[in-house]
Length: 320
Image (cartoon, rainbow, N blue to C red; front, side, top):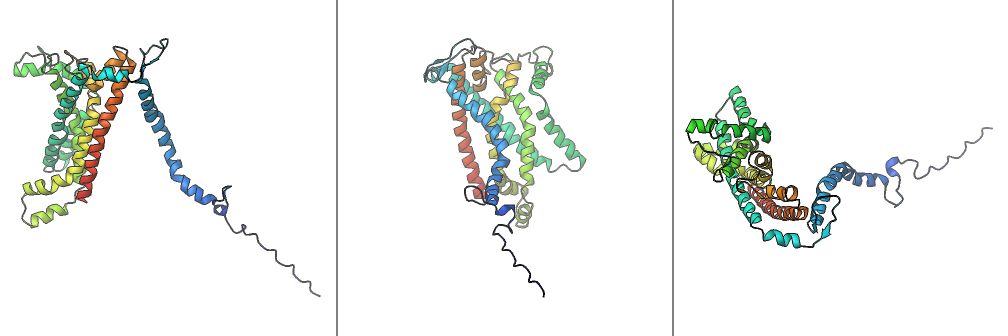
């Protein structure tokens, strides 16, 4: 007599599921939770650094702008509300530094917009290894440390032994003359930023398909017409990016040059808003006033950046 086989045991509903079928305590499949959380886990290191190094100092600057403090650890911080802002907007030096910052930005735009476009378009005619050398020579000034550049230009602009005065016979003290000192800072900063701007324009030109030029040539367009009506309009998002970079970064990039060459002089002729902020904090030891200047600077430049980003998005959408 053959014994009957034991009845098959029913399998549990979860035995055929892998780890993705497990349920979290909230009733949501654990696999779905991991899929939702994965992007945020990848972003978390960058978000932590952003909070620690950007948003936390910004919040502390807002808080410090409502106090009166001389930066000494033994000195108490006294709350003054909005008094620092009221005092700041009544200081003539603040408005003068804002005006010089505007002149600085306007003076740098030819170095970051006009000349880079001309140089990048001209470089299209250079072929072979000469083009590589040409690109390297243009970009090299951007790699020079600002303090080293300031030392070299101080020697070149020396009123008696400098190369500039020896060549032109001007005998002028370019760095310590109130009429020329600010333009010296603009010229040196523009010389350094030129290579970076040309590199950005080269990248923008590389992103423009050559089919547009070929189609225009078939229709009888001249090279000048192609540049005017095709190349430059399609390059406009790149140029707006350079404008935004110039507005936001140029006052910061001039700081080491000003501190090395002129220390804000002569007669505050080279003191822009960034250097004035630093001067309030570390020369007059008025931390609250410096923080208030920084907050107003952040709000003002943030508004300008928002407008430029909005224009850039409109231009990019129109091109698409």
